[in-house]
Amino acid sequence: MDPSPYQLLASPPSRPAFYSAWNFLYRNSKRKTQRSPKYSFMLFSSSLASLRNPQFSDVCTVFEYNGSAIVAMVGKNCFAIASDRRLGVNLQTVATDFQRIHKIHDKLFIGLSGLGTDAQTLYQRLVFRHKLYQLQEERDMKPDTFANLVSAVLYEKRFGPYFCQPVIAGLGDDDKPFICTMDSIGAQELAKDFVVAGSASESLYGACEAFF
Image (cartoon, rainbow, N blue to C red):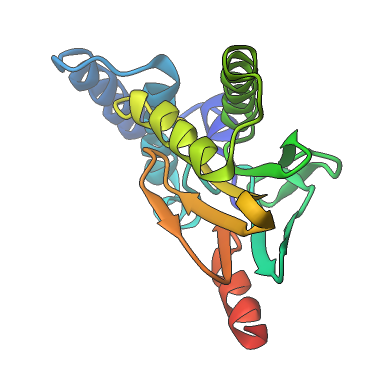
């Protein structure tokens, strides 16, 4: 089993690895652009991990750190969205009841793949923005409007992004199904049949294409 960056940081590094990690922090502190502490720590962790195990950088990315698999598909005046509930640290399973799909209202759901902590933070911000919309407009958001909101929230943090890939599924006017996904800075990808996201997206693509 490949060790996590936190395990690598907990163990004493060799002298070359220590100096390389120190140089990384020094160079990062001299940059004019400001990065969030979370982003800098993950870069530092990945750098130190690759020093100890060159294959680690090819196995683990921030988006794949907790593992996830989300798929949404459409039917006639309906949609379906599903996900796994495993929360892991690379190959280690931490919990099996992690919530990845959240209900915005009766006809709108969002799935958040990627880093678990960022997914929870992003969901809380989206619920807050949707409740403000309900108070002001006295109605629920349509799926395409909510997708634009999610895209705008992600783009606001483009220089220190949430490590999440949302999947949005809902019913619009006349119960017309709507699904889309986007990357961590809000670039939308619309589809008419299915969308997938997460660390198991390649396997999901194969399964969905076999059925569609």
